[in-house]
Figure (cartoon, rainbow, N blue to C red):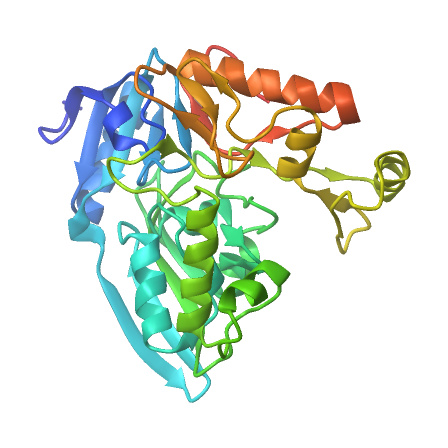
Length: 353
């Protein structure tokens, strides 16, 4: 099968990623229809070329060598949003995968629909939301996700997958794990609550509300203020980063108790339903000597938050990786806790922890 005419070659990826580093894609497609997605996947499969689906590049670290495969992105033509109220207590939003996630949150909260207000300020596209099961301040997209529509890569068939089948977990799903090379998300269906109370599960959000009633719009505004204060908002032309660079680690209950006994009651810990305990990666970094504003040449931590790794002008992916390894080693040496990098890593010679 000949290469489709809409498949480009040797396209720079750094400008398409919020981290701003990385090399070129050997092949690149900006698909404006399901048919182009199907044709791209069919050609890549027959040619034996690996494929990666690129959203807004907001949770991605690309190697300086680039990606020796097909980078598949979706054009704004695949960003349609439809809304219908199925019952007095539920509004359904069907969002095409290329729609900007934060625009969906803005639309929902302005209308008074609750369920995703704490997910404000998260960059990226709707299609990436269920893959990562994005979450913040006590909410996850899995809380309101109904189903996803996907293109099956090997057959080109359109399928609908119920949320219950996706294996949604903390920053994970089957779409990111065992199904990582099987599907391309083209539409996401959400169920929101009209007139619902905004989520105030975190004390930080309650404080940022400044005694306002917790409407979805007020909670969104509070979350945006929190993110801005932590340097976690991303804007074109601003600091290059992917938000939280490390996942908050989970440890056994016994290990958590031992750590708290050694390092004091102020050590943040969140008990989970399975008996494990989630630790705060930012707290671990700071206590391990990797505080806000730490800088190594063109890479460093944001002055506002220790969990935000920034790439400054002239930075390379290799420098970002070396800096991340330094942070991981510091936390391991201090706490014997392993920090895992949150963004996807593409094009590196070996898997990064």
